Image 1 (cartoon, helix red, strand yellow):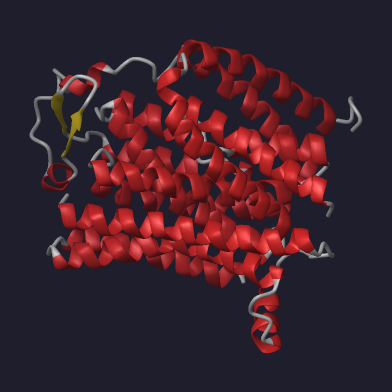
Image 2: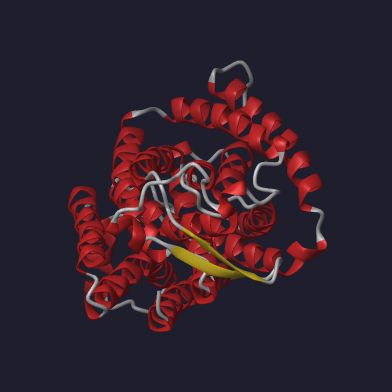
Length: 111
Length: 287
């Protein structure tokens, strides 16, 4: 395990969590200023948000924060896959790609 | 949702994250009972919330463990094949079960998980740090690639190890993934003892590696819960923020707390909470 891999992976995880929390705190703060009903997230909500252009509403920020949170471990796997390829460790690059494929199947089944 | 409820969720999350960090547990085992028993949140929503909290805390902890070189990244990625598959199965099955059934299973799991905590599993380093004296066969090339080492500040020494019985580890990690998807927990309570006891991985590396893979495991389940519409944005947002803050506080105060006593006290609380969930799920006790 090289320092490069540790730093890139570590940074990806830390950045993702911190960005997610920042978005969630911003969204919650806006909501607390003007409480209203926010129903459970559905995938269609994202398309509605993009079409409506309400990028800085409390719901948008909370949605974005939760999505960034879910993208964080996924990004970590992508970073690792690239590092394994760069380090010429094909077996682990293949395994990491397998993990990405499984997550891709989960996304296809889930949404 | 009222402001008071949001603040209660954040506060509960802080408590869950703090205790989880001190006890070596994910926030899930603590946040789910709070949501279900105190706020009457549906079990599927509570599990989805827990999974998101697990992603947050494990990602933060894994960032530190990777930076320090304790987590075995090669082993972690290999085990993720099992955990992600298991998580997909577990979360799919959870969608077919009613909330009361999940509550019953979770209550039983809490009671069972209290046993290793009461016994103090994980308090002492496992003899596996010295390797298996009866292992005379040469490790395979792949197993050799899973070889790990880290600097243990507690003993001021470099600890090296070779991972053994990898197929067993992958199989059991699959079961841990099923538990994660079904109950919203991280699965570390199964993965860590397995790696430490059967695979010759030192307990610190086992815990760090388990933490490393839990985030991806929880992600696989969270995606399916998200797709089903089980994610409540405000409950999740407040809980994630609280649990993350609590776990950060936990890393600061951990060295000042007598963890063995805390674990044993919490084991008793787990049994009580588990019993409540069992009684409520079976209708013996009303909300």
